[in-house]
Amino acid sequence: MQSVSALFQIYTFAEMSALSLELQPNMTRTFPDQFLWGSATAAYQVEGAVNTDGRGLSIWDQFCRTPGKIEDGSSGDLACDHYHRYRDDISLMAGLGMRAYRFSVCWARILPNGVGKVNGAGLDFYDRLVDTLLQHRIQPFVTLYHWDMPQALQDKGGWANRDLVSAYADYAAVVAARLGDRVKNWITLNEPWVSAFMGYFMGVHAPGLTDWRTGLQVSHHLNLAHGRGSQAIRAASADAKVGIALNLSWTDPASDSEADRAAAWRHDGYVNRWFLDPLFKGSYPVDMIEWLGPDAPTIAPGDLSIIQQPNDFLGINYYTRSIIGEGDDFPQMKLRWVYGPNDHTDMGWEVYPDGLYHTLMRVTQDYQPAAIYITENGAAFPDKLNGTEEVHDEKRVNYLRAHFESAQRAIEDGAPLKGYFVWSLMDNFEWSYGYTKRFGLVYVDYPTQKRVLKTSARFYQNVIRHNAV
Ligand code: IFM
Image (cartoon, rainbow, N blue to C red; front, top):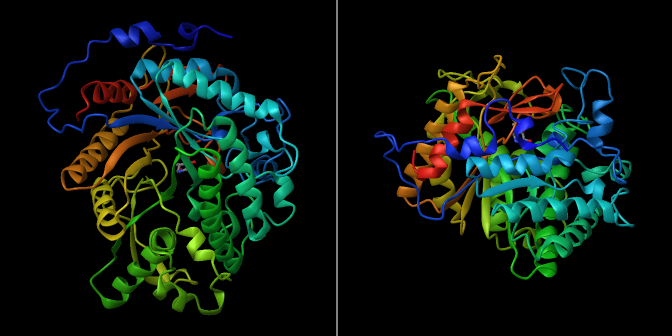
């Protein structure tokens, strides 16, 4: 194992802690005491070690091997090698002052075939990870499903097969039983909209299917899995706090016309309300069910009351807004996307921090969650490693500052926001974009696996230290 100082090109842990960062006069927005600052990653994006300690094959291993699916032809085989370097990565988080880490568990490490025999070595890894976090006084937030379904279950239809809901609940029970004495915060699913529609309808994520009705049915099974998973976690760990991470997009109409305003509402139905309503209100939005007609998913009696479990918190992943008009970019919903007027990140996503404020306020008013965490927020920019200097990423600093300000404004206005996880701790495998997009606070030099602090990491350290922006 490399020493920590060997890993950081610019700052060692001690140097990082010694940085004298002052409360700047312009740091006027203060967060509540105990506000939880952290960062997030996901198993397939950072762990690597895909053939280690009995891990089974996942749909992303398979998808990456399909020619043309990943922009740079890469895979998560090595990624950030977090599986072996997690201790150093945790030291890095601690040096930056982070108090929470959101990571995901790879289902195929725990149950290589998705069901049946539990792989003890897989559980041991997450045990070590959790223990090391706690030694550094960093709270683990565990996501149970961040898209890496065991391939053995995909071979049975994946989320299109309703039986998977029970398989998922069994898996959740196994992990909660093992880690629940130390892990108190659980996220059942990450971004079910992405799993369902990018994976089963648009074909750009694993498993790469392209069927609208299947995507819709999958979305219902995922909602159901959230409900069953919540029950399983609570049964295994009485004091567990359970929530879900939804990618919510603030939607503005492209114009004031009635058609565009109706289209924006449909988009809101498809991306936001399709998940929020069943979770918090126990029903799917009526306008969506009417619009979908025969394409609407099959919903068995009792499903909706299973989905509507009490949520201890809502996780919101916020990156950008959508500007929507009526049109044929997306014929099934008759929607058209409009390119926003502000700056855009390397993902082509408009920088729109007000959308975070509006999203927090809307969710607070319409759904009254007990607590909210920003479970992801961040930006990709084409960062460059320049010799021995730190990686300068002023655009990310500006992006984060503006979004922190929006969050603080929402807290002042009554949103029950309790914490913030920047996406991501470090650059990692960005799904179909491979390694071409960099979201990290920390730069990863993939050939050497060296971690190099970006300016945004030092900025974040300063925000955390002063609990203010
Ligand atoms: O990298 C992803 C993450 O896995 C889920 N939310 C969005 C991020 C950026 O695309």
